[in-house]
Image (cartoon, rainbow, N blue to C red; front, side, top):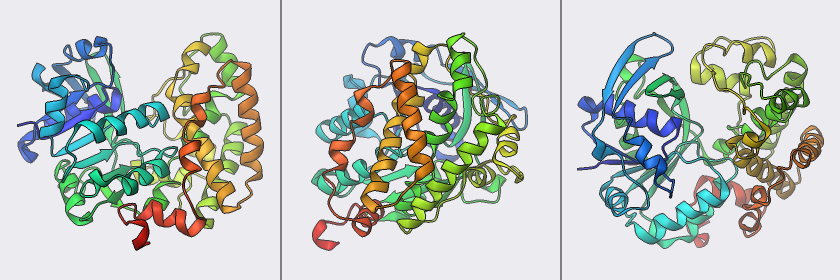
Length: 399
């Protein structure tokens, strides 16, 4: 029986599949990977991933993973439909790109009986979280569905051919939207059964936080967009030079500006009644790294962990997650600030710079604003927004 379906065959999806296979003797479930791709090319490629090597970046340990070809399918096929129907848990690892997220929600709502299922949105989505919360509130078919939002991936990971270089995070924040939050959380923790190795209930530890707080924990719109569109880094990209995004892409000067944006993000969260951590604090929590005196020093200390490379060309950058996922998040953050009457001068000035650079490289896509019509349908001020992000299962009459 297929107990888990994983939607999305990127680095995170494949790492999750392999990790669940490694720990299957402990949790007893079988997972199936369902690429979002409609062409079938990615589906065929995944069938070459039946023998993988997992390289732990911390310990250096190598583990071999053997997968059955039947554990790979296509989201849009009859096999994919059956896998979703049988699954007790569905993990969504597809980035929070508006057209993909909206299409996926529509597909799940129309074709799958979601009653009593657990849907886990890995990288819960800073741009789409309010839209997802409203979908839960307005969709009768998901009244009994548990939805968990994860602030980010369960891993630091990179897939290189048939090798996965990864590190399990010590702790990730999650928000649990469910008629029975305790049961949903217990089910999720049970799928990550190595907690005894770090003296936690699971590994990664699932630290529960309110939805309003999770909304402000990711900061891709800062750490992704800000680095990729920095003039010095753009010059490298134009020349086809790849750099380590989180390390070599962040100079002391850029780090100082990103730090100001980070502080305004925390300020907006506080204005909405949420506790938010600075990015250095998030890194310390997730990876157990010691604190450093500056934003720049903290990022440099991540060299053993963050190995992601930049786009190798402007064309690649235009179609990257860095823009397609994090620019919509930027618009959502600005929408929240406007809705709550919070002034963020450094973020506002930065946003103007970002728009100029997007036009400069021909990447000012209308898809970046695709969530705004849905956001504009959300009624109320700060209190109502907070209630929606914390308790979307409650009907409006219960609020």
